[in-house]
Image 1 (cartoon, rainbow over the protein chains, first blue to last red):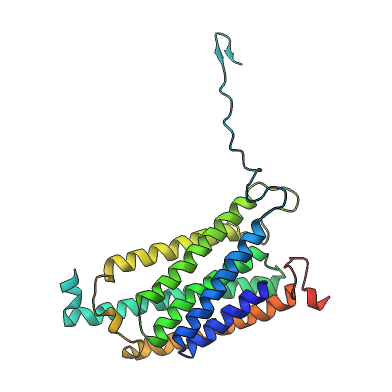
Image 2: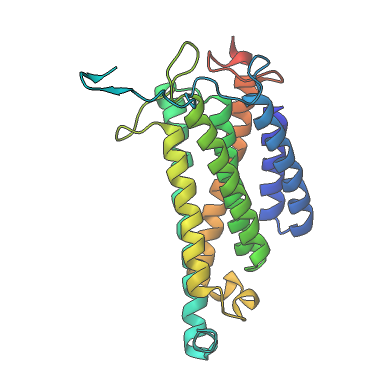
Amino acid sequence: MMLAVFVAMSCALVLAYLGQCRLSVVVLLVCFVLAVKLFLWEIYSPEYGFRMPWIQTDLVPEHKHTEDGLV
Amino acid sequence: MSNLLDSPSMLKTAIWLNYAFLFSMMFVIAGILTAAMVLQYGFGELPCPLCLLQRLAMFGVCFGIIQSFRTGFSYQNAGVSLLFATLLLVIAARQTVLDIYPRPGHEYIGSAVLGIHMPVWSIIIALCILTAYALKLIVLGDSKHLTESKASDLPVIGSIANILGLYVVALCLVNTVSVLLQCGLNECHTFGYQLLQ
């Protein structure tokens, strides 16, 4: 898949350099779609999905203030 | 602003500034991509899949610039560059967050440059590209005649940019061969070049 993405980008750049404007843009858009698909596939975890549970997002419980200090 | 930029004397300056901006951006990105390849081949730091996608996004930014030099400036080409700059930002941000908490199998790979690792640098690079384009649009975006200009009107910048564009195309082709050796037709890993083992 990564190879397909880079081959598409190479083709798009070569076509752009040769002045094939429209064709190069079409190939580039194909490359963009493949790249987004590959990116989503790379970051997807069967265990977590797209979530990132290693990042703490729960509220930290507030400390209770007493006359002796924090509890 | 529009009338000022469209006066004959200022128009030439605006066209020059526009192409100088595009050339500078492609020059910097080509430098970054060259540095990445030096780290890969010279220091044996194999790129991870998301690192490769970030390189791809930088090539996409260059695509819009090369188009502008080959077929004339257009805001569609600028849009292509901005689209890939946004892709670069999203991928880099996600990778930074992915490895922000070091754990087995997840830590920033590669050398830190000035204490900052590659995905964080990619965020900075993407933000610089987006900010630079925003500033350019603020200063030059109001000119009606900018899209009628051709790089051939500026022989020196145009010629050097064409050579630089060819260098970027060559870099992309080398990267493609490198991806073939590293990943083959399978999933990419940083263990080594799959086809050379």
